[in-house]
Image (tube, rainbow, N blue to C red; front, side, top):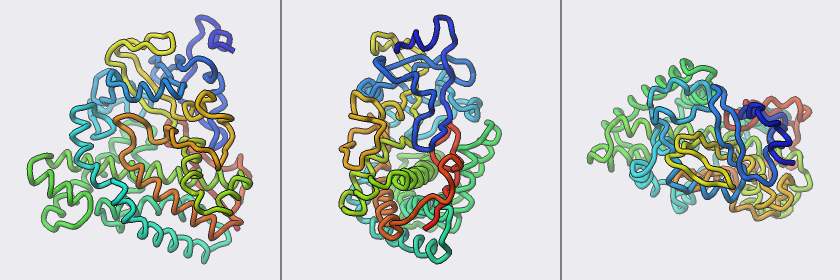
Length: 404
């Protein structure tokens, strides 16, 4: 069925994003955008038209194309979520800037997120996961898997990596949720201001009494040598702190839910613990915690027989790219034996997730240990009663009641 057959000529383009009804499946409305065409037209909340990229090959090419901008500070950069409509030209390091600034910031951080360093912190993540499960089992036989397990794993891990006191975790977890889930720009600004003030004070303390975290390294290598000013250090820390736990919380919770709902695929993991890395990659493809990435065309780009014009809003659909039948056989089937390493769950191109090695380590250890120790874990409520986050947020359950 063609786009014209779905939407008559002159009809407004459908709104984007949409809310999921099943936590790990695309919104039902997304079915109209799947098919032969790798892109389509949608409408943002403020009425602005946008191109939605749905093709896997086309999306990867565009995410690596320097003609697409990630500069959040540009006056006409697309706004997808109402809470960011009054950001006043504020750009966030790494995720909201273009090269050469992006490249300079990323080079400063790459050594801290390498495979060698991630392997070094795996024992600590394992110890943490074991302690959390000990506590959960002691309090059982029911729990909210989000608050008891999925949230503290990445929260503690990113605190240890950055050198942020975990004793402050309640504060920054709440402010992070307020920031990324705010309904209005005023609410988002308030949460941002509190996070910024906290990290600004922490940077000052670390200048006086250095520690051994990533934030301390940035201060010693960049701030004190003039490579970064204090505002840049604080903003980089804020991005890493929020991004370092917000998406992984959802990935752990959605991964656990998907495995519980697919017992025959869970059996693959239970029978072969060595299969966990492949299972995690398939979960990242299948669940697509990050639904889309936002860009703006800096000049005209030809894609799939259409012209994306300079200044046009471009949304690259991670969810639909990961469900593209041209890239994956039976894409709507969760297959624990599938080789899915070319998924785009971590994005693609120069902005590919810097912390993906850390996220993989957390997911492999958390999910592998969870089901090894509690193989009979199951939902305590029907699937349709699991409360899930809105379509404009990172995808995942608000809470996940389980029993064993």
